[in-house]
Structures are given as C-alpha cells and as structure tokens.
Image 1 (cartoon, rainbow, N blue to C red):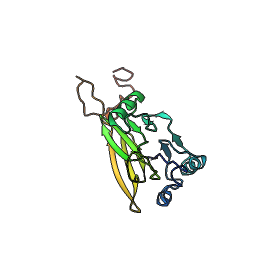
Image 2: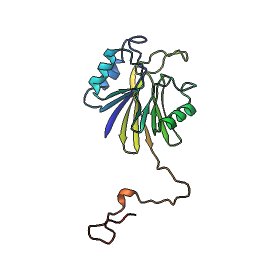
Image 3: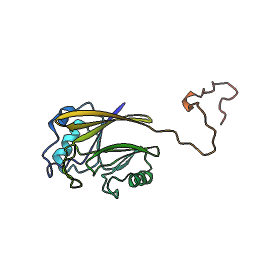
Image 4: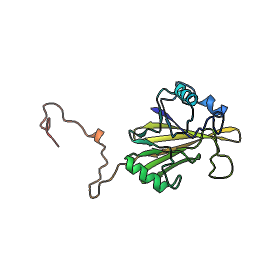
Length: 199
C-alpha cells in the first residue's frame, strides 16, 4: 500500500497565511509515502513543510509512472473535462492530477481518473464569488485500484469522502475475452513437454 497526499494551490503567503490547523493535525510525518502537488506552493518554507510530511515530494513534474501531474492552467477552459482528457492522452497516463480551479473534483471518464485536490488553504480564486472549501486528497494506490480520500473543511469540521476507481483492462477489438488472469495460468514444470516452449 502506498499512501499519496494530493495537494495544491496553496498560495502561501500571498493569498492565505497557512494550511488550516485541523489539516495540519492530520498531516503527520511517517504516514504518507509520497506527495503530488499541483503547484502554487509559492514559498520555500511551505515546500520544506511538505517535505516533513514525506521526503518524496513532486511538484508539477508531469509524467509520473501512470500518474500525470499538472497545475491546471494548461487546461482551456479551466477544469474542462474534455481538455483534461486530451492532456491525459498526450501524457499517456491513466490518472491525471490537476489544480488551478481551487475546487475538489474526482471523476472517471473513458477509463481515466481525474483528480483535482482543490485548495488546501481555501485560497481565493477570482473565478467565482465566495470562498472555496479547503480540501486535499490522499490516494491509496493498490495496483489497478486507486482509492481517493478527500478531506474538506466544512463549517469548521473536517469531513472525509471516499472515491474508488479501478482501471479496467483495455479491450482489443475482435479479441476473445478470457476470464483467466495471466497470474493464474499455471507455469510448466521443469522437464514437462511444454517446458521452454514459446506460446
């Protein structure tokens, strides 16, 4: 199990002074193996704080295994799922993490999973009236399954929602469908007639 903190659009100290105290109590060292950040960290102190949570911090580096990370300003119009789908195809990723909207979103489209952790500080965005809800996400990645836990600070209370996504095997047009998974196919034993043959 790998626990991944998905966070972004912090805007510290330009738009807000710090993460909410209740979030900081949850984000303790030793629990999270990796941090993926959509950007707008804005200062060295905030980056160093993230490194105390996990030494494995990636801030908008792009292609990361089958997970892509972008800030989100590349998406026009902002947050548009068709535009995000195009970016995911270009990056050849199954999961695309983006930010910029300051609003949490987790949605599956065309066997791809899109996550926007929102703004962990609830920083003002200018896109709409009102304050964004402070939020971040933790992703538990177990092979083809990604379980995402979104933490939101609503009316002074931390609320947690679970979103699960499973990558479905890609179908090849016209190919026969099998229910036998490759790891369940018995291997030939040494000395058997099939030993060393190529299938």
